[in-house]
Length: 163
Image 1 (tube, rainbow, N blue to C red):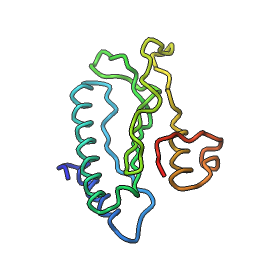
Image 2: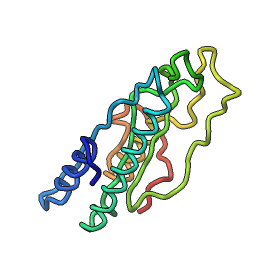
Image 3: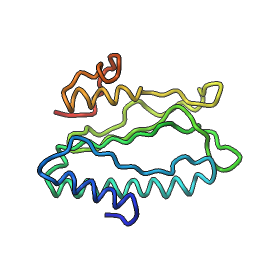
Image 4: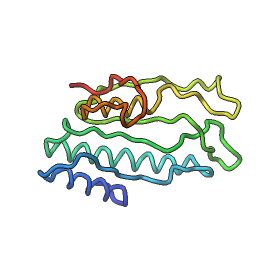
C-alpha cells in the first residue's frame, strides 16, 4: 500500500472488506482537490495518490477474491471551471468526472468529453451525464433496490455494471 494518509485508509478499507462478517459500504476520502491556486502540481500529486491507492486496493481485493464483489465509485461535491484563474488554479464549476472500478465494471467512457467551445455564461461546461444516473445504476443493478426512493425521481441506469 502507498505511504501516507490515503494509502493507510486504503489499507484499512481492504482489511474491513476482508472481514467475513461483511460490510455494505465504505467511504475513503482524499481531500485537497479544491485548487484555486497552484493547481498543476497539486493535481498531479493528488491524482498520483489516487491512482496508487486504487491500484493497491484492486490488488488486495483480487488477492482476497473480493474484486468481483466490489464496486468503487469516485465522487466530488463540485467540479472545476476549465479556465485558469490568476493564481494558476481553477474556480468551482458544475461538471465533473466520476470513475467506476470493480471486477464487474464494464470498461470505457460514458458521456463524452466536455465541449469547451460551448461554455455557459459563467464559464462552465455542460455535464454529459447526471450523477443521479450513476447512483441509480448502483442502487438498481448492484443492490437491486428502486432508486426512485433515494433519488426522488426516475433516473435511467447506465451500462457500466455487468451481471
